[in-house]
Image (cartoon, rainbow, N blue to C red; front, top):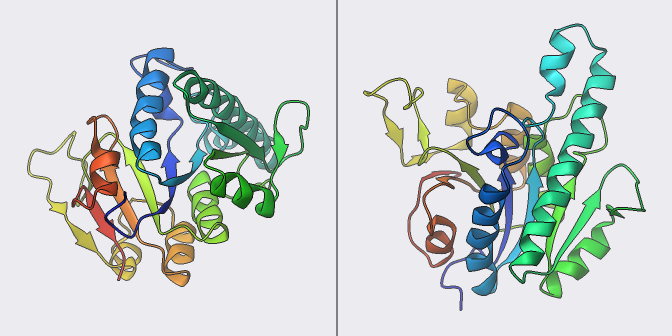
Length: 238
């Protein structure tokens, strides 16, 4: 039984995390680890939606910066998120968690199109839903996709899973004196330009009053601990 308000969550995963120790691509062992972490939350009864980036395969912004047309680059990045979504679905189903993939770009042979009512039905039936291909539009990041899907499914929280244990004033991997913030308001993040999620995602979360929790995915049990009502990572919200 869940002991805190987070009964329906939207988990934002970076594509880069899927590399594991590799330079690019997908690390199957890390996928299995993520699947087991999600299974712990799933077994607590949480309804889980997921948005995944595609940076381990293709980064649209980087490609555009190197001369590729931005719209073409962003569409390529959307396809990379579909590849990650299919891989994660496979890993989740291998550990016994029923999962569906919905895409913003129609590709009915391999995934369902994004239909909100169908997604809500899956969640209510105890299935994890992975939302792939971003919003289907160029110029929008997967951070913004996460905030949008969270609002649409009426999620209680957005969980941004990273490799660090919260939000810092500077990169803790490079600066030993980096200061961790346990709580920030949405306006703190926007005014100070703190790099958590892009400004559109933060604004959308603020408008819909959806808190954001940033936690360390590589520390086993963090998702389960958060859903058990413990304070984990950093929280952004009012």
